Length: 84
Image (cartoon, rainbow, N blue to C red):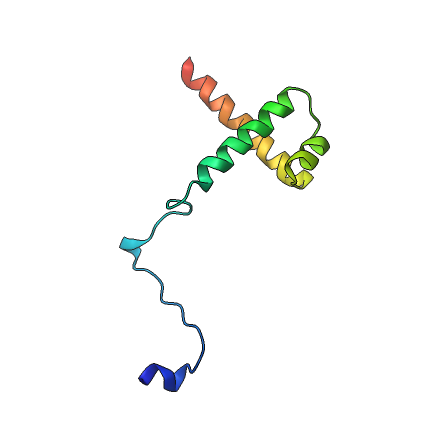
């Protein structure tokens, strides 16, 4: 084949056309699972757990825990502002 002359025994990547691209996590439940985990982290934080304790419980870095708490806090604030 002509391709073998250029790429013999190697892998090639052929990207999808833009109209056929899928968003990240659209074919699995990972987005839902991460949203649930992040909500649980925020609830644990509101219940009094420290960031260090949350990092140990969820096997995440302190920076990741802080990022998740901030994101969930903003999400919660947005939901409350929509109620008024």
